Amino acid sequence: MTPTSALSVPKRLILAKPRGFCAGVERAIEIVEIALKIYPPPVYVYHEIVHNTHVVKDLGSRGAIFVNSVSETPDGSVLVFSAHGVSPAIREEAKLKNLKLIDATCPLVTKVHMEAILFAKQGNTIILVGHEGHDEVVGTMGEAPERIVLVDTPEDVEKLQVENPDKVAVITQTTLSLDDTKDTIAAIKKKFPKVIFPPKEDICYATTNRQIAVKDLAKKADLVLVIGSENSSNSKRLQEVSKDMGVRAHLIDDVTKIRQEWFQGVETVAITAGASAPEHLVQEVLEYFRKLGVSEVKEVEVISEAVKFGLPPELTKELSQAAR
Ligand code: SF4
Image 1 (cartoon, rainbow, N blue to C red):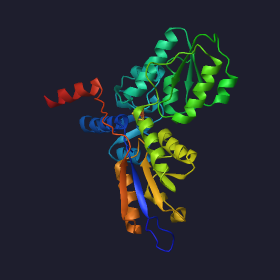
Image 2: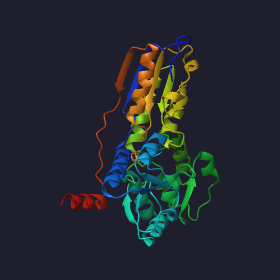
Image 3: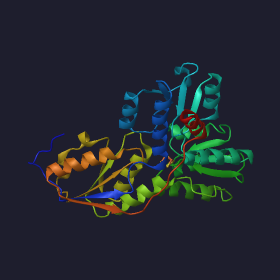
Image 4: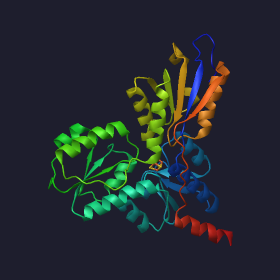
């Protein structure tokens, strides 16, 4: 997109840090990249590996085929489970097809699955706070479908009826808004005073840190641009969090979605990116503003991050065999 000079031009950009890829997304993409190197193409991926159109398109051009059901994969082929995780039923179906399975589920999603299994074994009704239909929620609910109920809002909690109000546990989708979830959790605590929680928060560090950073920047900005795809839960939450701060915010897939009329009366633009958005998309947006004549660009580090996850054992084993 070529900027035109007739319209308003912001004075400065502030760039959130942390932004963009989290450790779970980096790992999931690396897993597909390695699989594409060590196995003959194609490599099948169950659902979008991460919720970003550019990542999916890029891996697709290199030999990955994204499928929405196990039945779409030929017997004996390689299948990668996405970062959002899958239900045990999908794992079983895949095993029956004699597939080479590689699990790119983020370890922090696996942690929520483990909590669901444990709480179900203890005889609790499990309230999952999350968004209906999201891949992660579908996978988590599959761990104990007969014991998990899904709620999204305090109103959902109001309507909820459970078997035994004294045996209730709560788990949470990893990519929710911290503020919205607080209200839902407060409603759950009010209705079920004996409710129990996992020892460690489910909303993950990356979601939390990106929301804290964008809140900090939104205080100083007239407009927030969030780089991320429409189906990316954590990216959408960054837009919502900014709007809740009283600042206009747009979720953009890439630089081509920017509209210069948004800059009318805008001096400072804050930029962030969802956990599944690659850094090159951020750099392309910065380049757009540079061409527009914005020279004041400041990166603001609100929280430092140094999380890294190891590769799954099924892949490290293959890699060490390939190296011999
Ligand atoms: S957003 Fe959080 S849970 Fe999701 S992949 Fe990243 S680190 Fe894992």
